[in-house]
Amino acid sequence: MSVTTLAIGAAAVGCGSKTNTIVTKEATNISSDESVISISDRYDNTKELSAVFPIVNPTPIETDMEKNIQNRLLNGFENWNRGYDAWEKWGDILYTDDSFYNVHGVRLTLKEYQSSMNATLKSSDIQMGNFNNMIICGDWAAIRYDISTTDRQTRKSSDGSVMEFVQFKDYGEELGTRVVEGWAGTKGADFDGLTGFQTDDAKAAQQEALNAIVNTVIPDTLNLKDKYPVTNPTPIETDMAKKIQNAILNDFENWNQGLDAWTAWADTYYDSNLQYHTNDATMTLSDYKTLEKNNAESTNVKRIRFDNMLISGDWAAIHYRITKQDSTTGEKTAGDVMQFLHFKEDGDSVKVTECWTK
Image (tube, rainbow, N blue to C red; front, side, top):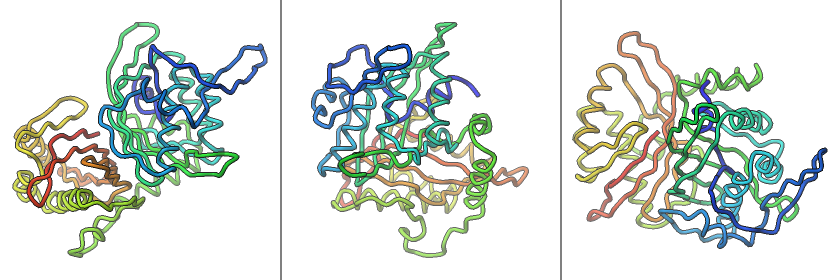
């Protein structure tokens, strides 16, 4: 399990680091050595924190719940800036004992999650870059931000980005708005290593859930909302949002019809000047089609269902489940994908102009 992977995957809600900071009314904790741990914990400092952690691509934040979520995210970034001890103390405010965080597909309790971050920060310095997206719908948030990780011994740095999907709950006046569960990053090569933080029972339950995805039968229906359900639905109310939803569902359907169907459909779904960003490269539409053609020769990928589909303004963030079947061995495995999509109107429909995928 690489430290860099843990840093990128586990630098989740409440993480953030900037060279500049602001002074807020703070809660303090006196440790056994009488050092003071200072944290930012207010609901009235959103405007101040937004100046420190600006959102590059803002979307509407309207309800009281959405404003509270925005505030908790911003305070989380501020507290990360104050070091691990402050972030750990902040965890007692942002989470409950029943909260979970899924790091690269591995479901961790709050204490397991904090232990993983403590181990990471002993060997790495983590700095946040641009806060590119904060899409909040109902009690869910999807965020995308840049990250730089520096090895404390070698001083070598690596840049990356993090995508997270987080569910919140309003626990009332005494406890406030807190995280129920979050997902940071997708299932990857470090999956087996990260399961070392889990109990045997948790590992077994997680494997059972993966097996269920592998054995899923896609419904035989023309209703795409029923065919590709969203496990955690959020409001889709505007005409633009409905167009985006329809386009995404049709992308799933054409993908599952095979390479030829999807290749033809791609010209409808994507803008001709598409920029398609992965961890490794930024591709044109032509490049992306070529990549998928090459991938299809060795692996059959099916898109199964959505965990989330958050749509706000002309942006969408989706987290969905897939199965991969090796064309040589026939082995079938379950995985997941996260995407942030920027759309533009195109007549009565929409097109994707830019996509970030993990």
